[in-house]
Image (tube, rainbow, N blue to C red):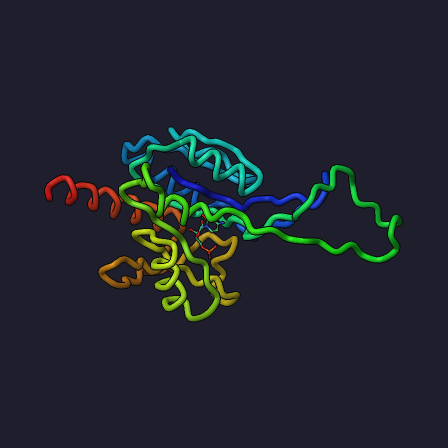
Length: 214
Ligand code: C5P
């Protein structure tokens, strides 16, 4: 199971807040795993990307829907959470469009916390996937923040990527990643997002091979 893309959290029927995410890296990972023969469910927020070959795609909009779709897709051997899930949704319902003329002043929004899908999967009491992989997009102290994130969420691996402006990773075709596991950190060469996806898929296949032999 792979999550990808952003989530859109509605403000009213015509407006939303979201994190930036093209979905490119998550879609590439779903495609690379399917190419190795895995049965893949891709739970995707709104993107403009075509579904990768041999992948089952479930489209969602909000974080709560993404969590529901992910839980419905369990059990899964592997979960890879690449989605840029919004941390908050707008509290309270605005069933009608907020009218600019109505109040005179700009409206205030109240936020409520979204579920953390990666943490929920990592700490799932009955159906934790054997391997749970998270992503950490950071703009500074990348290794430090990502290492702590791995421990806090309880996932097995974190793929840290430096999305600070000068790297051009955000929305671009290349990625510069470091794989962080209990064994330490391993920086990979800067590569096309499809190449990073193939490298990760191969790495996961090796992990399962070793596990079978142990
Ligand atoms: O906490 P942060 O959003 O930086 O963590 C990034 C990782 O957590 C990513 O793997 C992302 O897909 C996952 N995540 C999630 N649900 C959230 C927030 C983040 O699955 N609500």
